[in-house]
Amino acid sequence: MSADEGPGLYVESTIIMTTVRLVAPFVLTFALFIMFHGADTPGGGFQGGVIAGSVVMMLAFAYGIDSTRQWLDVRVVAALASGGVLVFAGIGLGAMALGGQFLQYNEYLPLYSKASKYGIELVELGIGGIVASVAIGLFFLLAAGFGHVTEGSER
Amino acid sequence: MSLTLLEGALLVFVLCCAVGAAMLKDTLAAVIAFAAYSLGISIIWLVLQAPDVGLTEAAVGAGIMTILFILALANTVTPNADRLFEPVRWRTVVFVGAFVVVMAATVPSLPAIGDPTAPVVGGEVTQYYLENAYKETQVKNAVTAVLAAYRGFDTLGEAVVVFSAGVVALSVLRREVFA
Image (cartoon, rainbow over all chains, first blue to last red; front, side):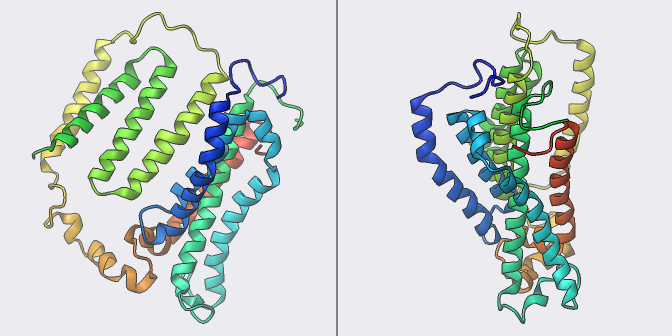
């Protein structure tokens, strides 16, 4: 807990911490379910990604924003965001490399039988990664405030 | 057009929340009214049989947006509200009222919910997606089939827009890492 966390922004509460500890795994599972199962049921990468991002916000709500910021590896967040874009564009360009059109999933048929379905699942996962990490990122950026720069970064 | 009790109650709830979000003087109260509005709208999407949109509205509108608003409030100075509602300016009321009347005038010409003769259902494109989506993409949710396969290029654009929003937020706030 550093000094730049304003008074009243974080209240340590055993009830909230216990609840979040109990609920967070289920919320993360639900987010992954929405992402994976979006092909056959309502949902998809955008919705699942937002729910996955909200897990981190729940943790920050329970354990304090700055402790969560320190616990979270920034490289993972950045990798999720750029990896999502790369996966999506890569699948599209890969189909072109195999001789089809951009994002023509059935070009992958020689490699895997249900190519189209799993191509779409991968794309959904990529979208989920982008949305989750940008949601987390905006959360921490807003939480850090606008007027001052904390020790971790330089101008 | 007849409404069930649930639909009527939802519409009244959403309208009250929307007016509350616009009128409440206290910003925190307005943010909470806005979250309740989003929740009501997402249930309305479910009633209209658009669960994909409902899920998005619940997660983004009622969830993330509220958290980001509250964080922004926590980082700014909020003046004490001396009264419950904003003072009403009659000119604004006339303008908004006229807009509502114009929008409401289009409502009677909308087809009924689930009307099989509605133009969008009978349209060639809709029928093509409904008939061929599973055959061609092997996903059962036609919305996902359109989103990721038929309109995949558009969706890539959307995903990149989200990504760039994050990058732009970083550069505007002069930071190098997200967390």
